Amino acid sequence: MSNTAERAARVMEICARLSAFTDEPGRLTRLYLSPAHKAAAHETRAIMTGAGLDARIDAVGNVVGRLGPEGAPTLYLGSHIDTVVDAGRYDGTLGVACAIVAAGEIAATGRALPFALEVLAFGDEENVRFPTSLSTSKAAAGGYDAGYPDVRDDHGVTLAEALAAFGGDAAAIPALARDPAKSLGYLEIHIEQGPVLEARGAPLGVVTAINAAWRANCRVVGEAGHAGTAPMDMRRDALAGAARMIAAIEEIGRAHPDAVATVGRISADPGAVNVIAGQVAFTIDARAPREETLAAMIAEIEAACPRIAGERGLDFECTPYVRSPATPMDARLQAALAEGARRVGTQPLLLPSGAGHDAVAMSRLCPVGMIFVRCERGISHNPAENVLPEDAGLAAGALLEAIFALVDSAT
Ligand code: HGY
Ligand code: MN
Ligand code: MN
Image (cartoon, rainbow, N blue to C red; front, top):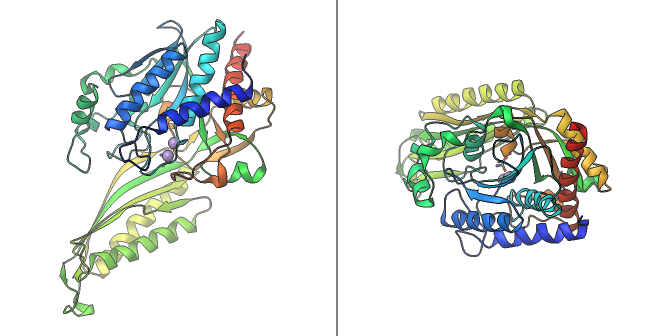
């Protein structure tokens, strides 16, 4: 058996190797089905093969590394290898690396387990390129939206076209759904992407639940005009109206305990210094630990924005495209993960997840559990994202020991 330092070296090496695959030289951007994602998927398959797993890339772009006979009851491990724009190298990739290192160690020892292991490197967790939600983990878990192949990216390319260019096959996606009767559970390692573990001096945490989330695309329509001649009380300024809406959305996020609300993207047309904006598009991302809190926030947002639009003679439309439920983590898997962490010498904290994860999609298939890894200053979705190699080694070890704890409890 390896030790923490050896596991750390292997995990960090995989993260370094995959960080080289980007669509934007000089920064890490690897969107679903992009050339960089394709190259990273092939590299991940090679890494899985080198670790002793039977690896392939499936019809939706997931990289799948299996240890054990097809058809056997299966424990899934994994995370995602797609990234946001100008990303850090650990969001998603750390979990895939830990899963490969843990499964690879079992493969190397030749220890027979009473179930198969399947490592999954998902490809569309960030949902940055297409208006989808956890599409490739939904393909594995069931619940893949039949409309997904027809959605388009900012360049008008459909997901189906991008998938064909990637080497995938939209028609074969429905057959990827795993059999719930043969699915024992899903375990995911992920950076915390928050400051709690670092503040409490804990390398690892066991996740208790994942927040409910809602995302929408909004459009505000006014009338473009001359910035120098249009009197202030005769304007239908889409950008000034959107600004009031965005301030209202922020206030709604602040008003509910443990909730968040973010407008992360905005565009104004025609976008000239001396032209009153005729059209504005912006996104909303709202989240809360409890379903009823999020439902209240959505109702408040969907009331405030049209009210502001009406006061200003603007048209407003809001098109929700993600509604992710609050997802509790399975108690038995939480206990196994906590036992795994203790077996590598750490006492894990229990904490909720404000970020979404593929575990939300996988919870439709089987029980799910997650370990969070401390990350420097809680920074994520930022190239400054960083983890301590020691913590990465502890996470891979905790995952491995959690698998053994599940074996112990099954025998
Ligand atoms: O946005 C999220 O919660 C995740 O990082 N995709
Ligand atoms: Mn992630
Ligand atoms: Mn992310």
